[in-house]
Image (cartoon, rainbow, N blue to C red; front, side):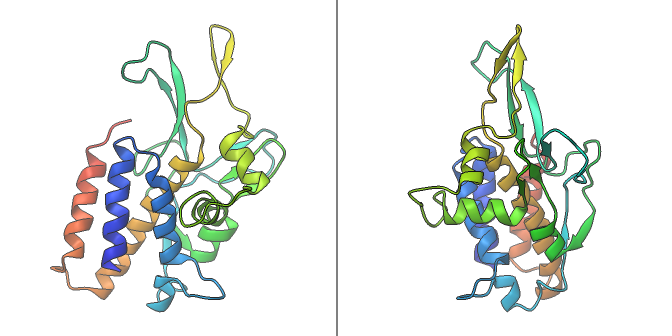
Length: 226
């Protein structure tokens, strides 16, 4: 498990430094840790921990009565990127930054966290869980495999703005600078790393090298600003 933790931490750092492609590596590592298939068991399943573990849940509560699209996991940042003159908007992962309606300490059972909690609903009413996004990125979009044809729902969310949000600048609607999927994967990875740290406290002595990796990750996150 130590190798997977190291992989995730290094990919998370690289993502935070601007390489969004690391979301594909993060999705693959998340899948290895938590996703069971008919051919293989997740690493946490093999350790006998996944069913009894409470996972950190940083999403806001999904409102089924909301008539517009829903974004429960990321936030939207509006401003000017370095070297750019025009204001833009982008989806970003909050990690442990305080934000209205979000918790940095809430924990829920695995099935609710992985399959049942809705983190996006787009304008056509299609709903996405963490499992949906991680599997789409890892299995279709270059994490492990590249499918010639992406699932339509995922393609619409990641390529064609099925959430429907735009930034209006000088009365002109403007597309966001990125799609919501990579920062969502980054946020899910953050939840997984926090959860796995709790598991590691039960599995390893406090002086195990894995805790140095967690410390460097926590220091990295604390130094980030939106």
